[in-house]
Amino acid sequence: MTRDVIHLTIADLSQFTKSLRGALPNSPSHVEMLNHVAQAAGYKNFQHLRLTNTPEPQVDQRKLDRALRNFDAKGRFANWPSKNSMQHLCLWGVWALLPAKTTLNEREISALIDQETATKDAAQIRRSLVEMRLLTRNKDGSRYLRVEQPVPTDARALIRKLSEVQRVPLPDVAFAFSRPAT
Image (cartoon, rainbow, N blue to C red; front, top):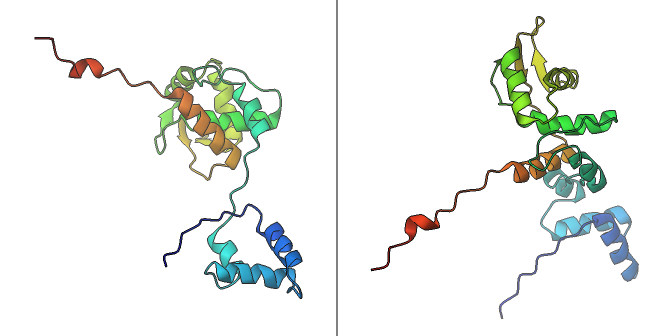
């Protein structure tokens, strides 16, 4: 007899084991139950399961929606938020547009920021990116370089949403395959 493969995703393993323990007579402790569930899934113990499956933090959808209000319909940074935390999140969207591992002079980075944003305040954006350590510059301010670093979860979600909006639609190529009527 063949077995059907059923995939099970458990959002909260701790709550799952508490419910399971409640259904069992003479149930083991919570930690022992976590270890039993992990072993049933093929891991040595619960610590091994956590080590190989680091949980991804949840995106704060309200914060993401608030951040997106600061971008125009084309996905360009348009409004300077009043809250510092929102400024930081929005500047990640600008950071993602800067070329990686490319040294730019002040004029080049200002032109790029002006081209990619609707605020037309490249100096403020540049200074803020440097303050956030998303961008480095030499002491005389003549050379700028994007700092490569891990992107926070909310910023990653913002960058993903903006990249969907900023995509240039592909041209309609149906005309290339049409044949004239004979």
